[in-house]
Length: 329
Image (cartoon, rainbow, N blue to C red):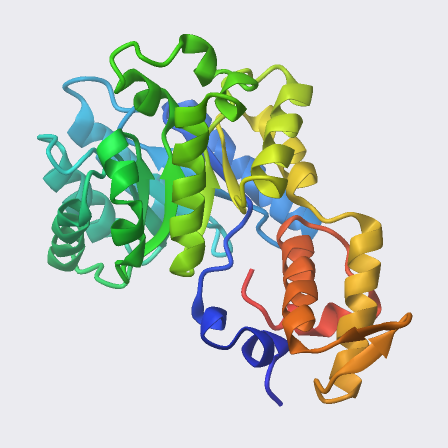
């Protein structure tokens, strides 16, 4: 019997269904603690609810890039079998890039879920990274890319269209800095980034590019990591107003608020479960539910509500649980 995901999403079913939180750490002790926390929360929720991205770009000391890349490879290789571990390498024009890829993808490519490529300006950068993966024997690995400049935003649709690209992230700080002082510093804060026209335009362009090509839009970090209210408000706006389905974390205290912000409500989960269960009984023909007609167009929406609930560690009603036991977390 075909899975509801294949029936309802069609070609979209092949797209990535990523955890809603991407957690970054670069210092050796923090990388290790992040992996430990991921294992603990996987045990708690029964699924891996956030990625751990081990950071070479901002995590490696100047002059110590090679040793840091080796450490990242070792940590990835030693991670739990169910772990989702990624690595952010240096940009393609950095002297450490080639060694990052050879070491991390070459030694730990079989354990990584993706490589994060920062400061992507065009598809040419993606092609260079793709060739580096192939040289490292990791041609299967997807690339996630970081859009951090006005020129990259301009090319977001072209970048998102590349088959190797799985997700686009927005690099807020570098984007603001790239404007030579034309954007006020307040636009880097949790409030200003949702009101400055140039920042808003960039976020929407990246989100639209991802949705146009079946990729995952990942929202930028909130640097006020001690302010859980600001974080949750930002995450909620990113998800509900800007179309983002994933967001960065830079502190362990941000992970649970992010999961809560991206999770559907209990009422939404209950309604979606009833509609999907009844649709399955009708072999996906149109049904009437509480006086409203539903068909495959709305079934797709409600199935995606359930997928988001699963990715955020929510308990699913028994009527739909079996379908998610067969999905890869």
